[in-house]
Amino acid sequence: MQKNKITFILLLCFYFNFNAKSQVNKLTIDQVMETALKNNYDISIAKNLSKEAVNNNSLGNAGMLPVVSLNASGTIATNATKQEFSSGQVIDKSGVQSQNISTGAYLTWTIFDGLKMFATHERLKELEGMGMLNLKIQVENTLVKVISAYYTVVMQKEVIKGLSENITVSEERLKIANKKFEIGTFSKVDVLQAKVDMNAQKTALMRAKTILTDAKENLNQLLLLPVDNDFDVADDIPLMNEFKYEDLKNSITAKNSDLLFAQRNIEVSKLMIKEAKSLYYPKLNLNANYLFTRAQNQAGFSLLNQNLGLNLGLTASWTIFNGFNTANNVKNMKLNLDNSTLEYESTKTQLQLALTKAFKKFQDDREIMTFELENNKLAKENLEIALERYRVGTSNSLELKTAQQSYQESINTLSEASFNAKLSETQLLKLSGGISK
Image 1 (cartoon, rainbow, N blue to C red):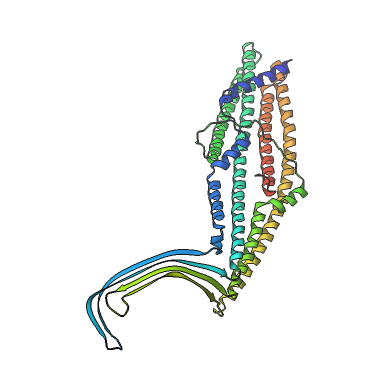
Image 2: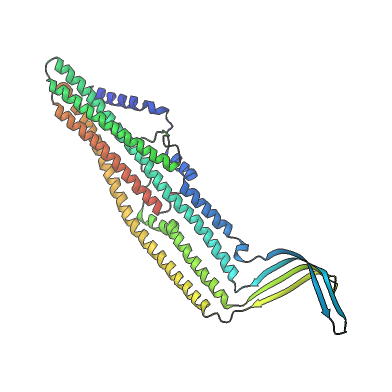
């Protein structure tokens, strides 16, 4: 009966301690992640860079479309003119005016350039894909930070919960000490020690609340919310995933953003070799223009010359020798491909090592969390028994204080173990490409 009463008191205290927070907006981890994806500066920058890569991927930028331009010019001149013709005619005038007008539309279209335009178009597609992967990488990095910041708040909330429950026990302990002091079975030392211990716990609670405020401010900053924005969070730190090592290993090859980025970089290097080799081949351009020209003079053999019409032509060029620059450029592009391949293999090796370590850490953290969860239940039961023994006079304040300390330590270690397990889970999700959908 007494044990049930103690449990009721602990629960009642917890209810009143957090009842005021019930009116505060309670954020879930999904809401926090969604807000981060909308507001975070780094993600916004990555989105703009991705859009820029999309804009660059065009037929025109690859050199597949013609270039059309309009030109116009006009001049008026006044000169002194002297001309002698073979017929013996002589023209010698001053103040002779002349007018020249020229307008036209010009088109230049590369018909063949050693297939460079096709390689360039494919390279721009790969760069667009790399831009999207870069955005995904930034999203993943941001989500890791946000998840860590969110569960830091949850962890601190659990610490405060334990301190609040312990203060309730201390208040009960002080009441018991006062009553027994009044009837003469306790000395004043027990009362004073109970007050000292309770004040120390209240001080620890205030410090824990300060840490909680700092953790909330850090999360608000990541979400681009007002720093003083108040909110509540979940009451615990759940683990939602069961992992199999082989599944994670396969998922890294298929979904890991860093590895996919390195893979696309290899394709870009291959296409750059094709672009460099295009200079070995001739280049053929189609030229077309539609022109109007008019030249008018007050003196001379031709007083008026006017033309209007369409002109078509082809221009072929072939660089036979350019100081081995093309050959050297091709060699450099091949070296660049070798480097891209080496970077891919290095990234793959590093990710496999990271997976092995992260998977082992997750298993350890999850097992530690299981132990700490059991310890917390035992410590809570021990505290309830110690309080009852203190109440009936079969134990002293030192035994109760030790039980309180053990209970608080169990809450702290359980919160930390849950937090570490969550971070390990998050790291595995990031490595396997499953943290963002």
